[in-house]
Image 1: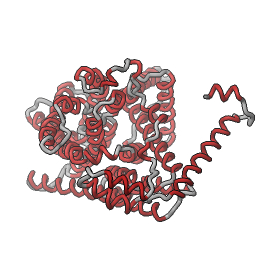
Image 2: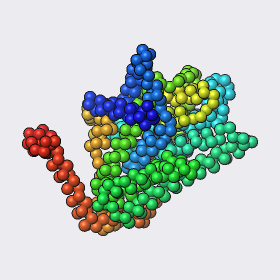
Image 3: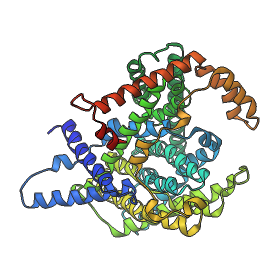
Image 4: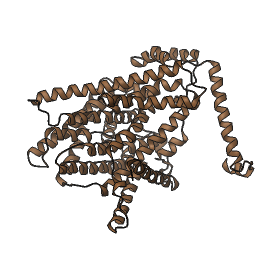
Length: 523
């Protein structure tokens, strides 16, 4: 069975698992936690079958890091950038960048430095400085999928929600770049540690800003192309162009030795902010729902593989190494969140209070990216690679199951949810990401402003300043198409025609005859 067939095999199992979650109404459980748990059960079942020599599924269980970085990760990262709530994101861009870049670097240095010095003191397994920093970098990637689901269900402070969500998006790309930087300098023959540090810093800055610039440039080019080449009457071609522009920055960046993940993230943010509003309403909805579906399937595959890896991965477990790594991860997260939040409060109108700081620290879950990066590290000897992989899996499961499971009780105890959510019965809490994606179309992603309406809106918004003012005054009008009344009428007719056509097909059913009883039952 080839890699493509294995991918289809596991994808099919993952889709079945998600269907079961929805079927049995397990809304009280974040789907990431549920899929990891089901992956563990599936891995145990496969292990029992193999022990009885009834089948051999070793190849199907193996997780290929190249498949993750080429097929699974790009849709997840692009969709994260594309579905950002732009208003809150750009209003908090300074805080998010500080947490994601400097905070991640602080966490990586604390974890990596702690592992190195504890190893030198013979307290834990001894590792080189570059290997320690590589592990510190990969384990600093946060993935609070379960936490965000709980935030949305309980309607916590939208600023807290955006700080955690925005940090996790940029943090993933920063963590990957830091890990690649450490890998690139493994075995370096530079004479002094200071020279190595300066070269590593230069390499990181080149990767970060070069990749971000490439992704931003690609996104702006896509906006200009779809603004001046009107493809709104051919939604299929329009959608195809968007898919090409979505994956283009990843291929370009990897081809010139930059970070494809960083490039595709910034491309997603820019394309969502400008290019998306040059599309027809049909393609806007199609793009939004397609990205959500593909990204969710990719996330589900990765979390299922994570559960399977407990039984399929060749492990090397050292209790002292695991315990110290968990302690260092928690300390690194604390040194990241609390001092930086205190510093930011001098410049923020909406202060980050101690309760918010504690929840941000507690929401530092680890997920798919640390797991995949740990398999991608080319460490020697093999026992070191196995130790890093096993420790990463334990930390990921510890944070997802323990911290992710404890987030809702913590929020209720600390009383930071909105009063309307506080009155909800627990049975009303819905943590299903799938159902929410299927039921919601974000109104901010459906552009219906004419030139005059847009100018009137900007005139009323006198509170805009900095980048928001520059964007509203100059960038947005330059990169997006302002609609005429004729364009709005055509878009509404197109949507109404497609909706009526779909309704008629559903109403007639497979036999082609209308059935009023079936229609009443459907309604």
